[in-house]
Image 1 (cartoon, one colour):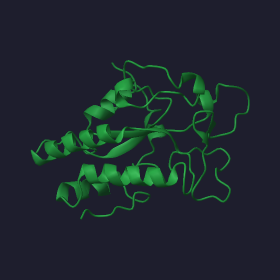
Image 2 (spheres, one colour):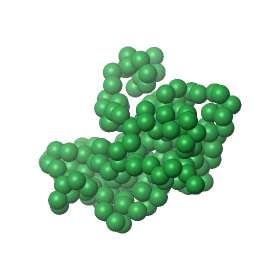
Image 3 (tube, one colour):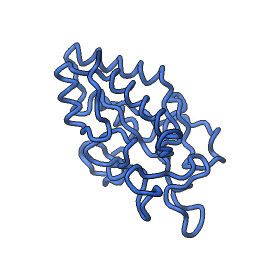
Image 4 (spheres, one colour):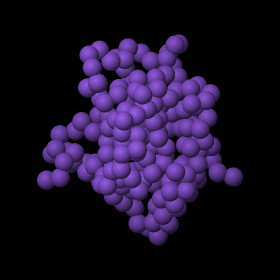
Length: 203
């Protein structure tokens, strides 16, 4: 039986230690993460943190591939085999099974034929992109004074730690359904083009 992980408090480095020791596998992490998303995204705590989730079959196949690489001694980097989320403003190829809506129903059926550079970089680093998070619809370009964390595609995000939901000025990234990273992805995606690990644009 695999080790049960407290995903709300785990860190990327802590998960990597468990993966390297063989206490858990990336397949285990994906299964447990999907269970928590199913439990609390639109049910349970009703966090509405995610607009879309990777198809289970694809996510598990990706995790199994990375587990096999680890077993063969091939590690792509310190984030190898760890599941994570990207905000739904970040372009992902249709083959990943998650639309890029920017929170708008008008884009729900749009077909995207390439990944954003940062998505390719994350993939090459061995991360598993498990879902796309909610956001202000059209990244707050819909009109003046939008409600934070509200979109037509994802509904209103809610905080697991604040009575009544979202803190004014806060976003869903960093709340309890997030896939644990030691630095929030929204900060990563704002990194300068000369960022060493994951440049936001190709050089």
